[in-house]
Length: 284
Image 1 (cartoon, rainbow, N blue to C red):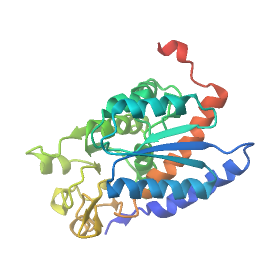
Image 2: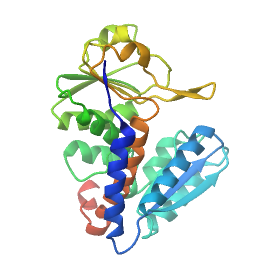
Image 3: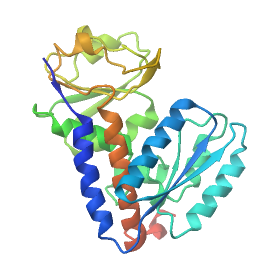
Image 4: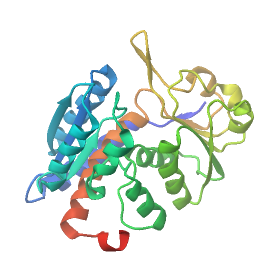
């Protein structure tokens, strides 16, 4: 049976360390979150982030917008937050209902982009420069590192390019090669069966079954879907657990780790802003 990678327990240890670090600062870090629309899942995720921030001592500001808010109104608010020295992190809860996501994310100061989605942060990450990496990708890497099995060989990532790109860079830093696989690939099961590490983030309950897993593989389930009030991952745990070497549960795996790494990214953003570790002049 697979080793279950307990994201809640690991995240709790990280949050405790962050709380101690923040307590030693002369002033509290600030995080601003823009939440657009009425999607229940997005509101739940933001509430979880708010609770986590309050627990460790990060000041949390939430800005609510109607689903039909124009993109320019969001970018105007981001401009204001970029200019505020007491706001060290800015997060736009995704997905946006109708707005231009790329334009909105690109407007955030890269040194305040605590979700790690700004294209400049990805460029810096690839170049080995100080950067804020995707919180969910950082959470995945932490979980892989917690497995008793040594993570070696090849990784297959079943996800969107937005999610996969920073993760591929972080895996390469750990000397692991990776390939992105389209979830609609007709040869999906053949490709997943060759993966030493399988990471899936699609949002289709039960997409990955035990028959699609290489025996002993590390399986990281990032997908979350609610069906009849119950949360499911992309992995069919019942059939995968007897085959895999390690597996993240849903809930309780990647989700808590993503929140913990978001908190860590707020401190990283604070460091970049206070110490000016990134020279913007070379990026122009």
